[in-house]
Length: 309
Image 1 (cartoon, rainbow, N blue to C red):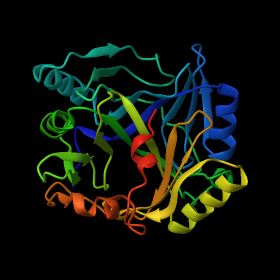
Image 2: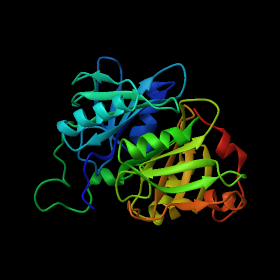
Image 3: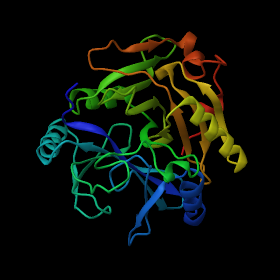
Image 4: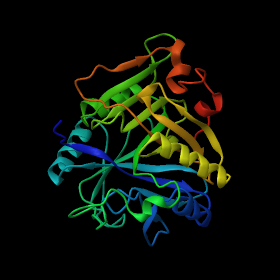
């Protein structure tokens, strides 16, 4: 598939309640690599196999949650075109100057119907790593520190009007809907999973009355064995585990969910299916919603659906 326009998730800015506690968790337990701190007190991280300067940004605040999520686009021309398309769709945009985020170029920010702040950017500094350049090794010593995911992969967001969100992402930003979960009437979507690549999903939404809520940010692991190792490390560090290890019906992913010290949920997962724009959207009906979320238990845990930041 020739990828043009929006390429992939690029970063998420997460609000934390105590920065000292958060940096220990994200750096030592989750095993991300700190790449900088800015004058606003934000702390920047990347996973060991990521090539750009940052993917996770922490900001200390009075409430947990997510400030914004950014997507990388393929060029400045695409950034200009997509901004014009979003504005023509009826959504105002804001240009954030280069350098507002460390090592990141100009960004286009807009609020989507679910209340979330989404950004597009074309430029971010690349770092020299053992995995870049000539004759790269398959991993480096950083891959052995903490849980050590390969990359920031996606986010699941909660808010209203997800059918309007789907229309924007599909018809303006060029995503495709890989899977959906339906409510009891068989017509209304409970959840949508959308991709701008060949991944199972790059972003997902669940219908929720309150706007702009975060369910989780997700980190990709190399294998089911690495997911199990992550579960061991969570237990060793007394991390609050929400679900798993188990498998999803949606995406087929093997997974475990847990919480950072501020109460933000995160996922480590592996083994998902591929999705392409010409594939049929896979649909899960209400009578099988438990299997869709918890493939092994086949029933929902209300706290998993209801706890958000």
